[in-house]
Image 1 (tube, rainbow, N blue to C red):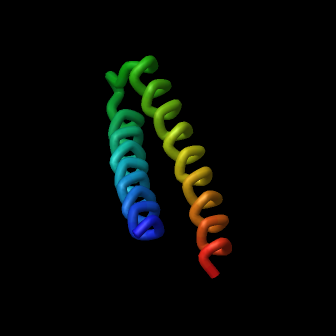
Image 2 (image 1 turned 60 degrees about the vertical axis):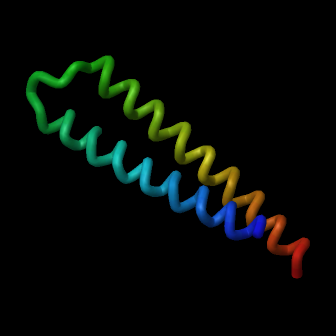
Length: 67
């Protein structure tokens, strides 16, 4: 149950990262892209990456405890 929730969260975060990456790429392709928006997207993407790494570490620890 716990592992299922963790895996579900990882999938959701991965999907959000993919979405933000696409938006960031679209913004970079747009000549009129606002630099502030790009920085906000990059910051959000970085935070999501850090959260995903934390969740992955916790999931690995929980998996070891369950084994």
